[in-house]
Image (spheres, rainbow, N blue to C red):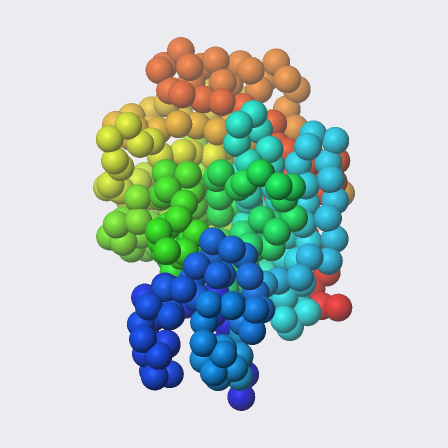
Length: 344
Ligand code: SAH
């Protein structure tokens, strides 16, 4: 019989588990404290739990944190973590310090099935979904590498894979990240990025999670978006933006639109002006991501003046637009550069 990974369970489910084992519910709460507040992964070392309970639990359950195979620091201070999962599959997480923030970028799938033309992860195809514990485990594994006093302040679901295509595990991992008895992040410090799955956005809108949503738009006409993002053939821009308009935002919360700038493809002043029109009526922020190159991509990053001209048009029309110079480009950890061999 395979062991239950306790990282797959919410604190309330840990309480239930304790109860089914004949222990009081609060033992479940204590367990969550050991796992999430103290970072302890050895059940037998949880010293304030009765010995019998620890023994019985250790026979059925484990706390399976992915193992870090490699840590590659970048010159910009970010760090790529290559993690090995129980079946030998690998995923990557990226730690990105920025002033008073420390953001962790997590993966939700091994590979990705959406095949965006400019994205290296897309060339891996989808290998499999990650489990809840494998998503949450990335946070625990990354946290364990930090020096005393440092802590992860933000988590972005922008690593390998499409979070909304692994919907149930993504949502449950978000609940664990924000549960006060688990990782206790404020939902405002968490961002889920999607390729634009309308059905997923609509479901997420009803979850009352209050996390930030980022949408990878990357084009302003269906003709161009069809070409660079095959998902657009299923959910066209108008339909996607209609779902975005319906998505509930809290007071002062904004939806992020990501826009990778590809030389000669989607970076013309007309594109910027079309983008302004498309985003009318949405409380939006635009993240312009200059394309990060990879061998054989067939795309190029636009020259700097063209990037800044695109940004200026958005700003002139009152749209908050920042240029996101990706972190970790020198170590293959920047947006769209994550790829790993699948098995050991
Ligand atoms: N599947 C989700 C999560 C990935 S987030 C999504 O599509 O949003 C990673 C972001 O980096 C996405 O906006 C993606 O489109 C973008 N990206 C992919 N390849 C890139 C590249 N080569 N250069 C810059 N950005 C890229």
